[in-house]
Length: 396
Ligand SMILES: *[C@@H]1O[C@H](CO)[C@@H](O)[C@H](O)[C@H]1NC(C)=O
Ligand SMILES: *[C@@H]1O[C@H](CO)[C@@H](O)[C@H](O)[C@H]1NC(C)=O
Image 1 (cartoon, rainbow, N blue to C red):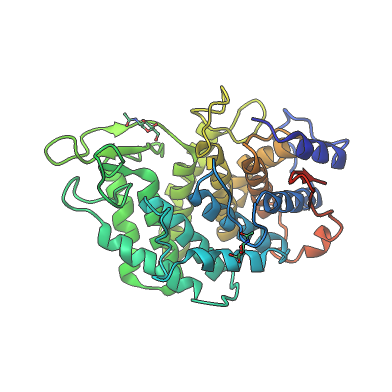
Image 2 (cartoon, rainbow, N blue to C red; image 1 turned 45 degrees about the vertical axis):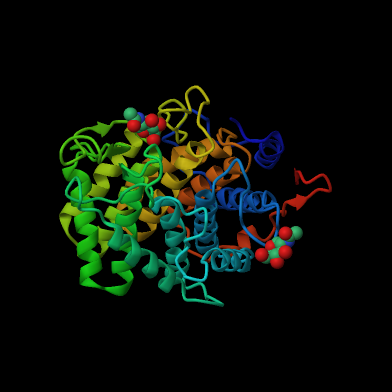
């Protein structure tokens, strides 16, 4: 699906004469100022989509995990631009979802992945030094990590994280060891270890990554496959679901970058570079340069989950560029074209996810542009803020 026409029109109005031809994906990147202004409009537009303006939660047909991911996107946007207007919304929402047990085990946390998206958002808040008016962000992320570590399942497949937390009727994903659940656990461990310098946490990141490779979910060309069934075969995990999704590549890509950054080991830089190449090969539209969901963008069949995957790939590309300056140029070979496509109105998404994806892609573009992180707030000041119309529609 394309951007809602109001957003597309706003982008067109703002960039009546984009100097960059759509097909020219090797062009020098668009000006940071254009990226910034549009990213700020998209952040405002995402906010307008929340039914309750006091909490950053999307409603059905979107999922709770996507709200956690969108919180992470706003945190990244704020860090890149220095635009702090969403900080209190983000703080209140994370604390509101943390629950009394301080681990995001809400009724919506049915999968290890669901819970981990929120843990990563809390961890980003910690990394960004956002003050917490309640329980420290790091405590929330650490609590989730400790719980998931205890759920690491050695009964089958010699390990791995199950997709769903509880066993239900057998058709519910409890026996699926998914790449996203394992990838989020890996990235959570890698980033926690980076902050805490805890050797055991670092060892868990190594162990999780090695298991995923060992079971065949990452191949020698850094393709990442969707998951494997632990109920098949005597010891489980005898075959692999070869479906590829952009967020699976993204989650391992950034986790590998964090490992490279903290260990200085060549194997992790090589892996990061391998995942960037795989992302370019599998998830970029060669004609337009736009990020592209291999399995569903071609015929517009992405469901409400899948439609947001490429936004998270973009975020983790941008985060990798910010963390590893020597990989900036490499990341830019994807993000320049992707950001240009967004500025030219070539965005896909569904309702608020269109804003989410486009904001993530522009944010990632900014992170490769030599923009000094957080020092550019002056540039967004002139940007108009989206308003909520009486009819509840987005208006500009
Ligand atoms: C909006 O969310 C806030 C914070 O959770 C809550 O106090 C308020 O009652 C909510 N408003 C509506 C209309 O549900
Ligand atoms: C493979 O994974 C995709 C995406 O999660 C899912 O839609 C499909 O049903 C899976 N196929 C099998 C055979 O498990």
